[in-house]
Length: 209
Image (cartoon, rainbow, N blue to C red; front, side):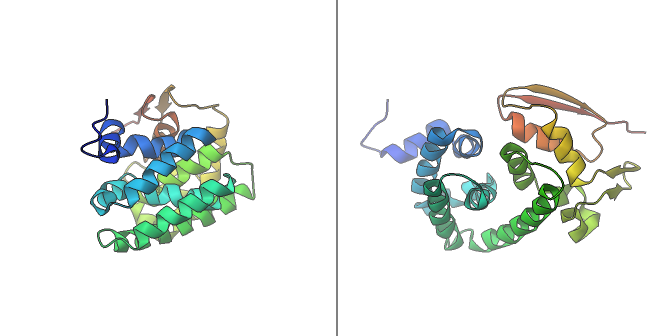
């Protein structure tokens, strides 16, 4: 039961957790997505929550919603919340850096969509899991639809389109358990983990000689 004397919002955030709200805003249907986003808008009005929201990937979520086919009402709320974080005294610089990264990811996904249909859940995964952090030596090429050498494991990271095609063919949903054999950099396993969510589980296996 909520104690109205201490404020409802902090208790909701403590009970549900900012990560849970963000996951719901990513994966929930429109009603659940809308409620989670409305709560995140209220959270965004309190600067003490800004670092946790940023660390949980709220910028990727908001920028994806703005350019997605989500109802216009959700796009407008996402734009409003994003402005709050751009103006934040706590995370403004980091938000600007993340927004530039998300623009690179959007460009990458445009390349992939030109070759095949990409579902919202797969595009969400690519937005939430930056490809570049799994291939640091590739620099800007990590956000091009090309294969990338992985010298540390003596292999290559597949082009983004190949990963997207594989994910589309698996009929993934939250809560599934997945075994990936031949994880390479771990990027595909991370995409899988995002899609199956906190209720699911992913195990990746790779040879380490």
